[in-house]
Amino acid sequence: MSVMNTFTGRIFDPLKMTKKDVCVEDIAHALSLICRGGGHIRYFFSVAQHSMNCADEAAARGWSKRIVLACLLHDASEAYIADIIRPVKPHLSNYLDIEAQIMSVIYDYFGLADLTEEEKKCCKQIDDEMMAHELHRMMPGEENRPVPELKSEPDFRERPYKEVEQDFLDRVHQCGKSSENNAQNKEPVSESGSGENSVECINSVSTDESAAANRAKYDEAAVRDGYRKLTRLLIEKKMTITTMESATSGQIASLLTDTEGSSAVLKGAFVTYCNEAKMMQGVPAEILEQYTVYSKETAEAMAAACAKTYEANIGIGVTGTMGNIDPVNPDASVPGQVYFAVVMNGDMQAYSIELEPQPTRLAYKLAVAKEILDVLMPRLNQAFD
Image 1 (tube, helix red, strand yellow):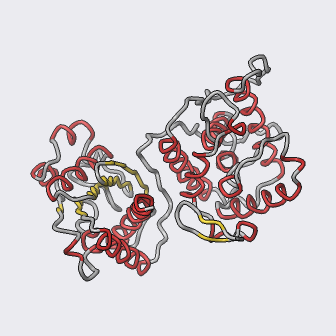
Image 2 (cartoon, rainbow, N blue to C red):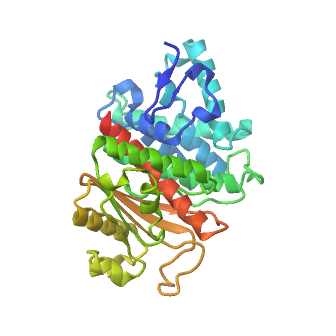
Image 3 (cartoon, rainbow, N blue to C red):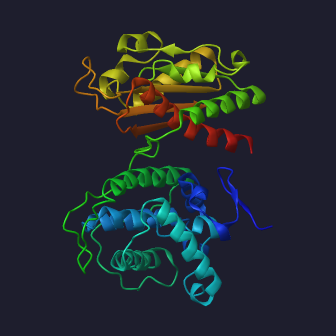
């Protein structure tokens, strides 16, 4: 068998991998489940955690955003061909060639195809230094290993893989946006790796938030087709869904009902365009007061309230600001920042996205709809596996 299946359902030959085969959700999921040190460490610590520590260290040193992203992705090939312990890897020439080919495709996908040797050297330096700390801390018999001084404070906690997976995914989207914004004007790096422009350290973000930024380009026909597939899947699995929408003002519900038979899955939905409407439908006033209407907490409360009202398997809450400042909540709104939450059979996950400027209000709504579809479909597919 010459093809592989990925977490999100992609099927391709890893020896002939192309950019269309790359999927950040696949990378985040796989790396969060691969243990460092071939598993011979005191507790489970994943490749994804190692990669995030490397990115934090690059940021703490003030290195360029491109290097931060490259550090985050430097082991991404292992999502497709697993990890080989370092003492063995140099003796597997075919593995090294395959690894290099896959990394070339991944870096190209994320706009890093033109990484210089100097930038690669910076990534390797941090990779080696972070590994020394991991060995010292986690590997039996390595307690006396000398470790280099770091600028950051690495997170060596044992964490649930789902938490790590979401954290890694968030960081890729955050770094990816910064990298793309600077792709045409690379930040210089000195021989020591210190960039002229400092970059803010990427700290751990909340595990249930997603800064899925800079995915503004979408195909409207593809979004509508995606929701038709979603509705048909829900009909097939006899699952129900509902929404409480503010920023999208009913767009998600509309997309769900574009398919014949949708009444079997969507019994009703809410458009709550003001704070009072949200409270009337079950959003606690204290949530709005403490976190503001534009927050993941409010999105979660909206998702929970509509799911409870209609006793639905899935509830979706959406709040945020499109292309303008909300005159009613000017201090809380940020143009293009949208929060949404999806609760599925009691499992709540919330996300934060930052949209690029769109030409119309409909374009903003469809862009948000795509983001929701992109996180909901993998969850459903995983639930039915």
